[in-house]
Length: 59
Length: 188
Image (cartoon, rainbow over all chains, first blue to last red; front, side):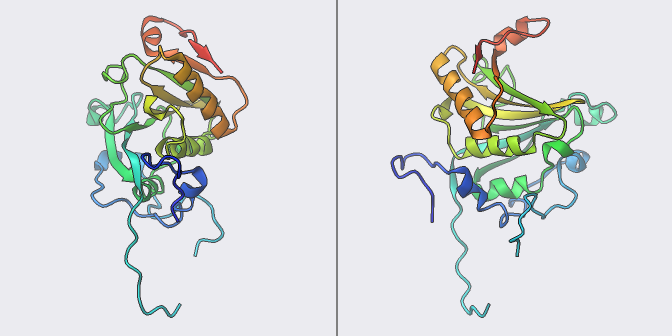
């Protein structure tokens, strides 16, 4: 399941393709996320909770 | 979908390093006073899942306001020349047209947090800068004098982005001294 580099288990290496497999499933801000209201609109997507990456397989 | 037993939540995938997103809008005018020093840490993450949770909710570069700088740096390293870990470093920079950097920025982030660079320990972080006519992405490194490491990082970065044009490496010290356009120390 984990696409780690078997030759280098001391380092947590992840390929781009492996990382991209999480793009659609991790759509919620991490626990503990806080941002000042003064910059939230500047930084955060107004459609928070929606993945950016287009994927016809979404659900 | 008749599963009667929900699987336990899977363990998160730890990254080699914790990373912090920072936002800065040095050219912001009306809100400048409220932002104070303007550079602000947004959140620190250390798992693949938390990276995507942030990325999916944060504006892509093409949606950020003109003048914004958005950084992703290793935890405990501030994206400033003055930071002791950055002080002797420099940066590789890629420029592109307005609205064109989204994919390159994502691929830069994935290469960094996935530890795809052979000299990843040399990397401080990356920044995307949104300006009126262009967007720039830069990778900051620690030791500009380590030519072999800098060249390796620059070449690999281009490979990861499939970027064909030449890119230049500017030493922070040279940038501080130069009034206009510091010269590239290295080019790949």
